[in-house]
Image 1 (tube, rainbow, N blue to C red):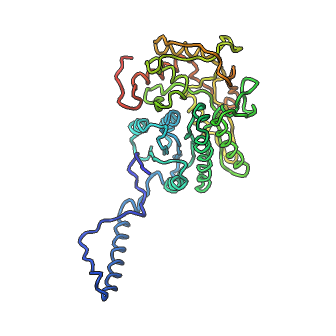
Image 2 (image 1 turned 180 degrees about the vertical axis):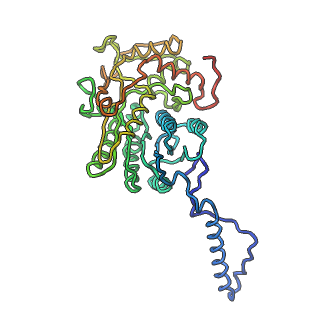
Image 3 (image 1 turned 60 degrees about the horizontal axis):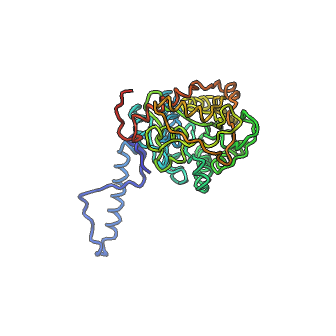
Length: 417
């Protein structure tokens, strides 16, 4: 595995040392066996002495030990859209953070931004690894003293999940099991799990509460529910502190303009509606296709609950602060207010200043008219309320980053606004 963060100082048991100036006995001489044994013993002793004198042998990295007053959080998927924003917030709040990401969906550029913002030793490290590799995950836990895990890492496109369901069950359900098992093996007692409203499927009654029955209708939602079930079954006989956050449609970006959403180009067709709007504004795609205008909603288009990423990560931090041993908290993270697709498109036009071409088409099979949350439980128990609820402002913030980062986390462009 690669560590592209701070220079790691863990001992490497398999380290090879180059020792020059040694005179090796001729192996063809049978009468020199004892000499060879003595020579090997001498070399081994010398290697041991050199390792003992090495700083890396005697001084473990700061990430490998618990420190009073410092909470060390493992953020899986921390190079991704939501994970990177969560890492930024944790670092601002003085947490110590280790990001583990295989970069299949995340961006190394986001990690670089975070490292540049927080260059102090012992604040942030990045480890390149795949959570599906149980040996690699165990090694990471054995070399680091984690106090909590925020588990974001997951493939997360509904459309893609219907085309490649096995990827989703492996990446979400199986990998979560590996993370949970490794947490248990190494005594890590707090888990904040990133889940989704997709576990609810097509509820008949709105708004959605935490008591709404879960009947997911696509592999993404099903894989997340399976992962939840594993965590909940385990928690019945465990003292682990667990928080499960089911969030709705994520939009926005860091108000400071440091981070944004930069999905892989080949995944654009599966992405969020905000990404499609920005792509249309930039001319990457010819326009937007809105499917369905005859729903029983104020303007006939579907209604969804859009949550700003800044509010979302605030909910995660509050969940971490309120997590209690042997307790499980399950919370919907949304605004509690639905916005129609037509409203969203108009807000995007205003935010970008581009008169985006929109084609209104027939309904898409399986879509439902309204989906929005009841966030009263998280408000009452965690004292959390969404603050960035102006759709236009959230999109304007995201557009500002998009406009200055047309190549994602490549070289930023200078803009006048």
